[in-house]
Amino acid sequence: MIIYTIGFTKKSAEQFFNLLRQSGAKKLIDIRLNNVSQLAGFAKRDDLRYFLHEICGMDYVHRIDLAPTKEMLDDYKKNGASWKSYEDRFLELMRRRRIEDTVPQELIDNSVLLCSEEKAHHCHRRLVAEYLAQHWENVTIQHLG
Image 1 (cartoon, rainbow, N blue to C red):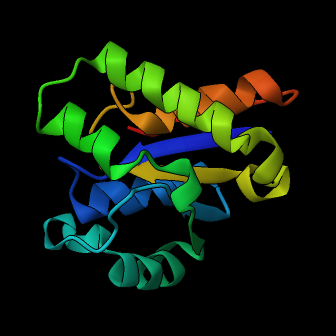
Image 2 (image 1 turned 45 degrees about the vertical axis):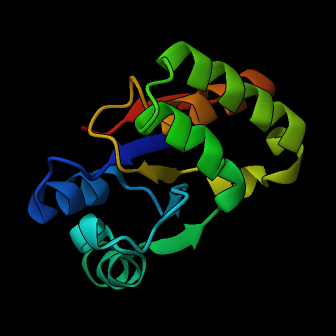
């Protein structure tokens, strides 16, 4: 099983969709808490669904159960909580949600987890992919740009 991840920030639409197309993934799983923000540009939910289908032949799925809570995100982004604190809280949230049991493996296989962060290092998409890799067998993770 392969899980791809990508963020759209600091990528042009051309770069973003080329990375997706070159991956060979069959669907994009949007794991953002807020996927309709005007700041998302080409990655706004309805536009993204259209572009994915037309440009990449990919399906679009939104999974809010793979997103942090608003409180958790606000503490990190707005109130200065440390990455370590955010990471610990998010890992605990995934454990409580039992995502390894509630998210179908066939949904995730050969799919791209989307969030906004430019790099995966400090993004919950990496945490989701790594968490699932620890609970499922034969998982490879590839971060796209």
